[in-house]
Length: 370
Image 1 (cartoon, helix red, strand yellow):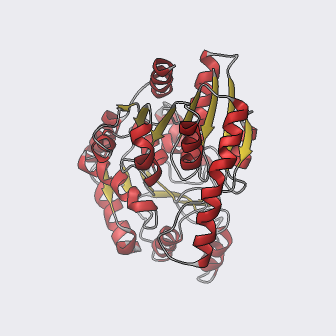
Image 2 (cartoon, rainbow, N blue to C red; image 1 turned 30 degrees about the vertical axis):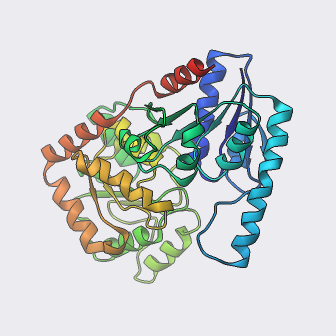
């Protein structure tokens, strides 16, 4: 099988594309797979590192604001269709797979012009503009949330497959959990609240964390927080201003980035984070209760839609970014951790939403088309 995967920008688009490519390779080792992205996104690191060839075209997401910069980007994006068409024509794929985002528009339109079938995978509960635009001519649209089905054109051929994720459940004994907390410098008998705002951190979330630490509000729970590599020094200086050493805070561990996120997510009793599709999928798979603070500037506010799915299922609480402060966050954390049975039930509710064998389901749908 010869396959082109269109994936660009963030890990939320690229990682599912890589997971799908890996599944195709494991089933059909002789397959030829190539990615198309842009010269700017994470694909330039993640795709070659995964062992796949990457071709780039100069296209952009279309902003609704009427500026000279956006007009130039619009013309570049329109022009990128012919660039994509040349790449597709030269490679001669059997199928094109788009994993959401603006890169899919020129690549899938090029495939359509060349009579090559394409499939879309949409991770979010609210399908993006590209997915909705391309859905009608797609051979199939594979979605991560069942709620996405009702938000696509009626004539679309939709299949709920889930979204691929790398995280796996890890069982830790009581003794192992205590040892891990001890190694992190945390109190072994207190619940662990994991806080993170994505790979680069989240400034509003970090500010609330700082205020909780300054006022010593986390007396009932441990905190482990990844504040982001670019914001770590800011957090450090802010705490230093009130004579708090970032490396020596009682029951608190602050780091720029968590490299063993699998282990820490499994160790955590409650997770406070944004609600991108990948994060939501991971928490469902691990069966972890969460407090979501949706990123307010996500396209079409899709993170809030993702968060509300779990809130409706009794698996999460939601605090909007505009309402976030130390008092609101701390009160909600305390309310949850004080009721262990309720916290456990939230985790079970999250687990019920998880979809198993995702990569296999996606491959089977692609194979049917072929």
